[in-house]
Amino acid sequence: MDRHGDKRYIQASALLPPRLRRWAEGLPPAEQARAEELRLRAGQPLTAVLPAGEVPLSGAERVEPEELGLVLEIATRASAHAALEKLRHGFFTVEGGHRIGVCGSAVVKEGAVYSLSRLSSLAIRVARQVRGAAADVADRLWEGDRLRSTLILSPPGGGKTTLLRDLIRVISDGGTHPPLRVGVADERGELAALWNGVPQLEVGAHTDVMDGCPKGAGLLMLLRGMNPQVLAADELTAPEDCAALTLAANCGVSLLCTAHAAGLQDLKARPIYRPLLEGGCFQRLAVLTRRDGVRSCRVTPL
Amino acid sequence: MIRLAGALLAAGGMAWMGFAAARRLARRERTLVQLSAALSQMEREISYRLTPMPQLLGELAENTPGPAGAFFGACRKGLEELGSRSLAEIWHETLLTAPLDLEDRALAVLDRLGTVLGRYQEEEVRAALARAAEDLAREGELARAEAENRGRMYQVLGLTAGGLLVLLLL
Image (cartoon, rainbow over all chains, first blue to last red; front, side):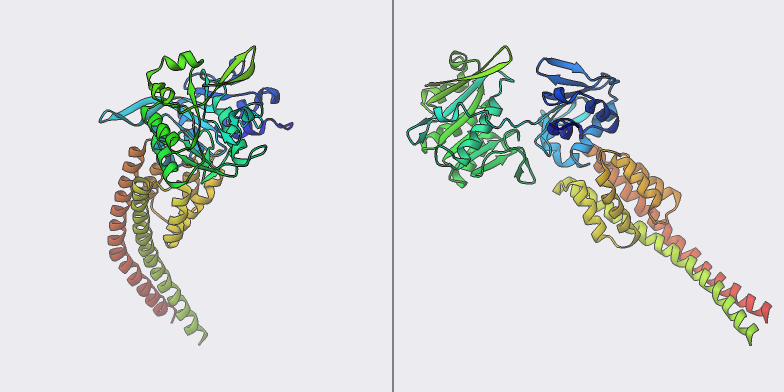
């Protein structure tokens, strides 16, 4: 952070049209550095999401509906048509790794969302890389010279993606252990945030990223084509993801994944993860908790 | 002798004015045809190749000759200011300054298109491009007819006025 504000926050607020940008940049630098999201809702003032909660920005007036469209125009460099497929999924990633979530009136064709006819709100999530987030965890995932497959758990917003990204970086770059080839199935573009093929967030020198495709398919393509030693995926949610991981585990590849769950019991209660647990695909469980704003990570064998 | 030279110069000037007016009409037709073709290409690129707008405008600037190409090039350059100005504003301001030399009707077609380009409603953008390409093609047809009729008239008028001037001055 410099005296003009937090670099990442300023980069994210540059996605706003001039009138909204002025209010966003008026946030005090200390709060800019902690801001997680900027939220725009048609007819409501612009707000920022801070660790303490969502606050309206000083002096901000109501956001006009057409300004939401302008944010997309700026974010896509006037090429929303090229980002339509991602828009259909409700979000897209822009240069710098910032993620824009979109909400509005959906146009449905043959039972699937085709596009949005009117935008009602946007959430710009400020991409932040926490180098060192995995410092206390990485060494505990090794057993001799073998990286044990690890599943990271926490409730939403617990820091799973941040920890996974830093683990990928540390394992890919090596340090106390030799560097490993890591294949990342980055379906939502949150881990590496590829832009023109270049990761916008540090994921290590020996990392191959497949983004934009379903995790299950991405994992299989990486497995077939890139000869990975480690496969990583964020937020396992579909049976196809679990099937691909089971296959990878049987090929001797170490896995690094995350899932929404408060702990092992919570995880066991969800049928989708049962094949992974019963198949012994993971040997370590890393559970993230947050108490009084302080995050901690407990690593246990599975 | 000086009188003769002056009369010939004046006659030549009148004839040149007539031919220049005819050339201008022919150029207008060419520009409209080129713009119409470029917008059709734009629609195809957006529909099938999902070409990003900066790249698309750059390609059109390179591949479209004359003032139409210069217009797309200026829009591409204007995109560097996206964030301070919307694409609609960039497009509109470029239209005001580009040497397209079109009539108000054709300029209005292009101006209307600018308010839709870059929007997230893809079908609306494609429909607007197709409509604008059609409108400009029709304007091109009218301009061709005008160039044939009035262009020939301007040429004849220029030559006749030049001839009359010679007769008057000699």
